[in-house]
Length: 416
Ligand code: EPZ
Image 1: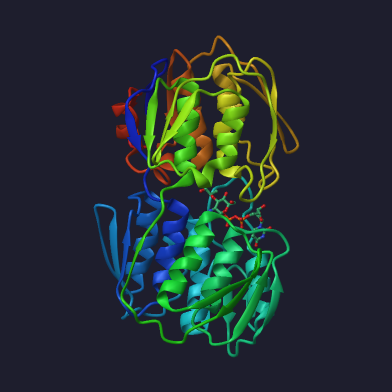
Image 2: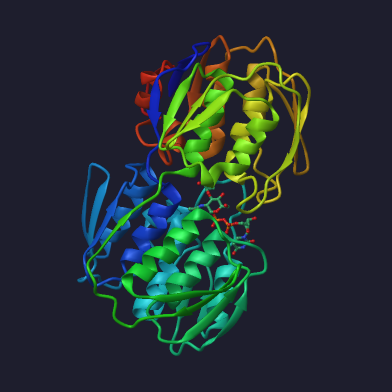
């Protein structure tokens, strides 16, 4: 549990860490390589540690220190994936694509992830079927790929996970797979770059259409530098726009966050860009705005909870339409305990002006929602207690120490 004494301004310098969502995908992609893989700038977070535990279970040699991860999958063993760690992270769904690529079979339960939606994997499974996989669905999934067939699959709705999973699925097969309506999130681009570095041929036929020609033997030693986490960068920027005093965010992904910067410009948030840093201060008396979440390069769903907290400080109401995860609002009932004034109407988040904020006892339920509760508590001039810090630790490395260094009064009073 965290004890948070809000009201301080945040100043000084904070650095953005490596991308969680790119790292998780690249770690699974590394299984396909018989050569050594060295990944730089991997964040030391709970989700990465959990995924590495799964790799150790598969007899992969793992060496992770000071954000440098060295993996040797040359002795990887096929095992069923019916282990607890798999349930805890959504990214374990990528193991389906990797296993079908490596072993032509996989046994797994439906992967986990944040609990604001049922996180389906129907697009993933239909893609595998389109290219020849046979799937038995009972309480677990058993998938066999006796003979992959070249073909074409259009993903029904833009999906990061489906795009990445199908890239991994085709990586070791010397068939031609055409995947249409792919996601263009930066972490997808990183997987494409990484697989290409390993020797997989991936061609962009059109903006959202990929042709994959796998390579049966990937055995080069490769090194890759993971980009910084665009969602952590956006999280810190929204904190700065709420309670910053010339807060410098080093390693800020400008190009991956253009949409958010455009919102800051519209609201006259005081910020400046220099090199790869964003320096930002709290924004006072801005008017409300209407927004909606969409696939990249538009407004990312992952910052919707954090944006809702920031927009609460506006002079008039704002609305965010949540198009990706309509139920991504479980943080609101908790946030309103601090006297914020947010309402939900289907997939609309209505954000009314909040003043005379209070302190309270709050409980987090997912990664970004719990970060939003931390943010809401830091803005209020009162003391709050927040349960569920491990959700925040899933995606933000050593975040409480890093926030204390820029002035946040956060005490960890128990391990949960
Ligand atoms: C990834 O989740 C990220 N997770 C999420 O970040 C992020 O919110 C999401 O992409 C959207 O950008 C990781 O990268 C580990 P999707 P993913 O497939 O791949 C529906 C965070 O906070 N869908 O792009 O699971 C789905 O329900 C996490 O870091 C199906 O219907 O998301 C959603 O409405 C949260 N069937 C939409 O598509 C499927 O088979 C987009 O989901 C797959 C998805």
